[in-house]
Image (cartoon, rainbow, N blue to C red; front, side, top):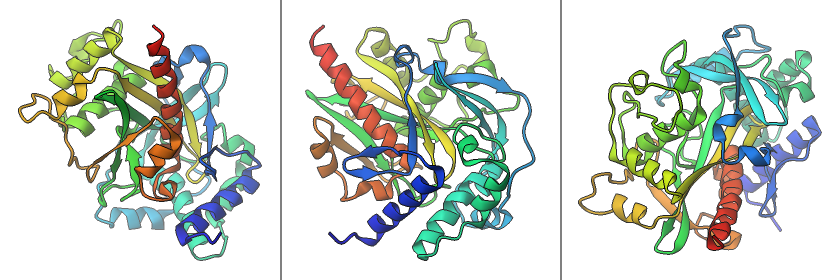
Length: 366
């Protein structure tokens, strides 16, 4: 079988990274993907904030390499980028799975992790594997160390949450095509919500180190066009005064979702950490599963008080795909969709689908 150029490039870079790091990468639907999946402990699945480890106060300023040229190219690209504060990986810990982290800067992430991916894709497209930046990085940081540590780079932590909902008895997943203005992976398919784990200020407020808070905030921003300058109250957070969470924000989509979660008609689940070998950045993967069919009916009603935002800045329309089988899911998307998805979205999609199927089947026997 002759591979199309995109398939061939994807396979070439994956094969190269497998050999370079000596690992077994994530495999699904007959394809290997350039990413590792660290699975959560069983008791972490319903406690997504358990993935958050220690926050170190220091912000590293010395890196194994720094691609000023790529950073400048991105700054001049016309895409939506700014040098915000991020949370970046310090160390991955296991049993339970946790990420220790420190503060970082978005531009440092672009000049290190972003540059690694750019270099790899450019080399594969040119049919010549020359990776001076990655080689320079690994002179000081071993390949094995890089898989569990953020040393020598600004490995901003990301989040990818698969939203699955009951559509008149058929469960469907939400995906979206990213805008050409996106700083990373423009035009690619991604999940909703997907984001960088970052505080709004430095030092971070206590609730900003809880991963669930960011999922709920991005859920409101990406699906319901909540302005980014507003923070939702997080009434499920214990011992966190609402007065610290923002300017008295009140959104019906937030309260409706919390009511569904409290009554068992929805759930938020932790599906693991994905380490993208292209960027050497970790992504926390999650599933938001909504069982109540009234949710989708309400957000798509003509007179809805919480209308679905199908044309948000980060997407070019929402794709709804069935999850009852792998074949049905893939048939609803473009051929070889994995070649136009960030690897972390691939992991979060399939791990979320598997988790959703398990939870749906379990619900049938309650």
